[in-house]
Image (cartoon, rainbow, N blue to C red; front, top):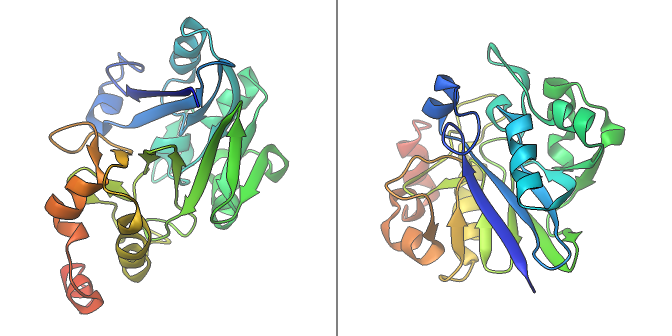
Length: 236
């Protein structure tokens, strides 16, 4: 498998003149097939033109968009007082399908204005093909009801579920402390230690890690019980 994977940082690799994008430190990803030169973009927002220009410079062909969750800093649209370019602008420039978790489709439509017919709705464990590369959709609710991660080979793009030194918030609309605990300890913790973690934001000391490192070093991956977790999250 000729896996193609690129990690791009807002404010550095695209949206270079947007101070707020730099402060938010979103990562977007390109995942695809290095041989067929096809790719999909994960969470396109902030500077769609800049992202597409990068894809063109790489001589890749965009075949779809992958959505980890519906928050505006990841897919554009309007939410929390923000109005950002994102998937709607992407579809205007390149009419591709947007791959979302079924539980997130309504939120994506509401925030971005795109139609459900623009989306492919997935369930946990679905595989998305880009050339000969298979991308597994892993449902990890907690940050939002339909948050999902994408596993390609031994690389995991985790959105706002897991960061290199933390995890996503659970106090926003649709968040659930109980679901986040399950997603971290019963889903992501089961991945092999050598799995490379690619988070949704550049919040840690380094832009990527491994699941082995996170199991040993990330405090949020080492909580021993749900009761302890709920106390940490202020639910007890």
